[in-house]
Image 1: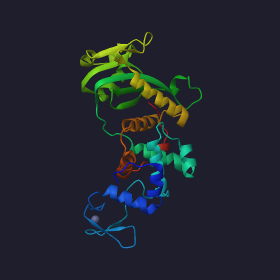
Image 2: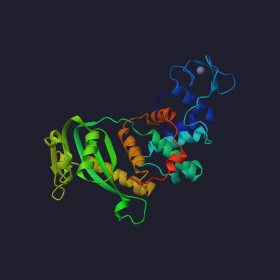
Image 3: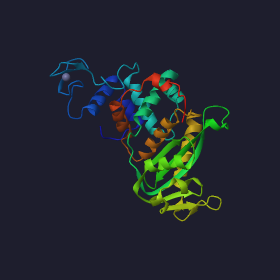
Length: 300
Ligand SMILES: [Zn+2]
């Protein structure tokens, strides 16, 4: 269970639903099978993939009460899709998952969104040390992409040799950016690097202003250690993902794609990413299809 996995191993080890089920059981109940209703120990029922609670006699399976329950999709396909989304650096589109797994587009789209939702960091740590901040613009789904409402602002914050945050902002005004910096940069920050954009002197607080260094991009890209190249390289990965993989991303779903990107990026050295993502899926609440497709009045 603690070995890094490649596609060949995945197909060999999880080629049928029974082996997937056993793995879910092992990840879900590391200290023995527990009843999901009363949390008391349970016993396996012979010749069935079910358990019987020793206390309340509720009968359940390894997938009961998880995102995998009640889906008509075989567990082998859930496992494959999770693996593919973890492994592909720039992400994988629903179209690609549809073709690779031989499922309908709607199923693939819903599947990708549920895996993506499990990748969401609920309470990410604040960034410290040397932090680069920059903003970029991402064209939305409509064809008239130059029209004002179709472009989303994305603020990127990257700790050198550390984590990345990509946050969709409702605009690029100082006040908006200030809120984002406040929520993502910690009190132990040592240096804050940005370009000479007029946003940042107003978006930083007094303490942060004292640590602020800027690079004039009209003159040079780096002045010694003063540059924003590492956050910019994350932006270029994001743009390649959006243009090359997803083609266009609606403003509504952009935050979910940004989280997916950050999750993969921040776990780039985690060789157990597949196992860890699967564990998150087991523990995460189901994302209803109707909630995903609900119209948003205001995309901001
Ligand atoms: Zn029970």
